[in-house]
Image (cartoon, rainbow, N blue to C red; front, side, top):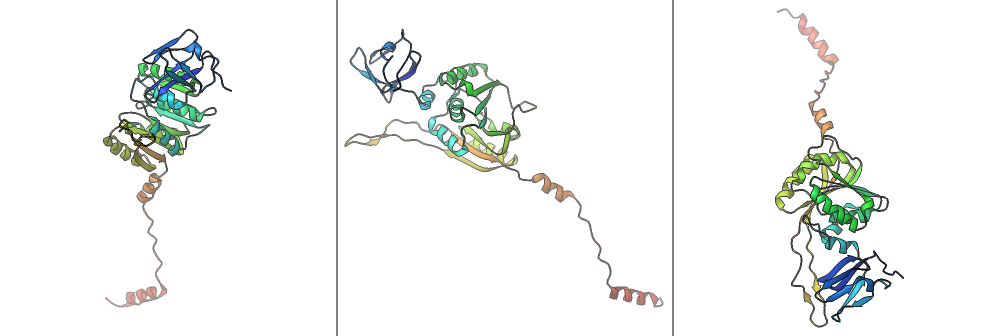
Length: 294
């Protein structure tokens, strides 16, 4: 039986639109429109239990998942939503023990989600240039409990002369101009390593795809993922009137070797002309002709 203690993370769940993520502290109370929720009342209870507020409303004490951390994350930038996160993990085959490079930490939602997948033997190396965003991301990563599996770098890989990493399993790019770093990403990836780029617009997809082909990537795929929730109730089930529309486009590719250099070298090398020796008949004829007077 998993019981809630002081400092335990808890999701106070009232309904799908009203839920609060907190770390339990004996002296803390949560003041909401459904009443006051005392943290101390949750201590000693099993996850899944419920509390009654001073307004006779009840909330369930749920153990937070990574989905909850992502959705309740402090936003410094636009986050990557779970509907996109799941496809990134599945398509790139990200798993325990892998080494991931992320360019553009943002608020740390993608960082936290991926770190939770590659732990305990894997690691995420994330790069950003904005120190303010990095501080927000650091707090979010810590809150999600995956700081041990993340290393943050304040470095602009666009202008870096040497790459700090090599033989990475996958690269995740969340920049306004992802095509700029594709040559750098190629240097850091292992053969057949995956790259995923977050692109809010189709214009970005076009420029990115051109760069991927130029830098010898294959299996290029661009997708958009739309999630629609259903209000399932007896006798009146229908589509939800609320939902998340377009969030981003995703572009996937894998590092390959087109062998362009070897082909170009072959084309530039002049072919040797091999002269065939004259046949015996030809030699005899030439001799006879040479004996004729002019």
